[in-house]
Length: 123
Image (cartoon, rainbow, N blue to C red):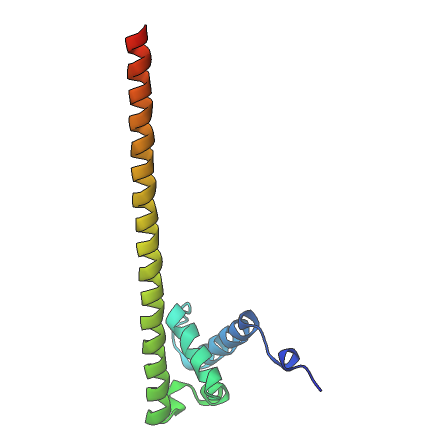
């Protein structure tokens, strides 16, 4: 039996391949060469997952049906929301960690001050 993992490409390989196809398509169809955004890359990843990457490469985004474009747009929006939630959770966790670290530092500073006061009184 063939190993399923042998047939799969890593995300980096897929992304690099998609970027290449995206840039190739854009150079053929666009008047201005703009750098790719994260949204562009994500759109190509979704198109690839849906099996539409060849169609997009050949015809461009305008070659998609409304249903296909809507599916990509919906999935893009859902992923962006999910990424935003993940970023917010990380930010909250860092803020919580910083608060805990600050309170520990405050306690340590108070203890040092207290010890210094005790040492100064005994002198």
